Length: 99
Image (cartoon, rainbow, N blue to C red; front, top):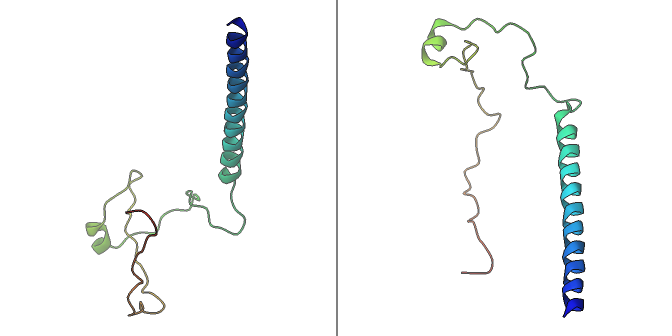
């Protein structure tokens, strides 16, 4: 009986240590990815405010937009697409297996 309990304790201890190592590796990987993605990607525009003053908005666009926390207008003019959308319908969504 004693041997079975000792064997079980060794197995539980080994499982706990393996689980701890897996958790530590996951935390390290998460921290590494967070640090990697926190860096600016060369050639891509930054989304942070660059310190340039915002252009003055016309009275018509100011009336229809909602100000942000900084008090600037969030309305932007979008350019039309370079080409119109295709008239062919998209393929139907399918799934395999199961019910």
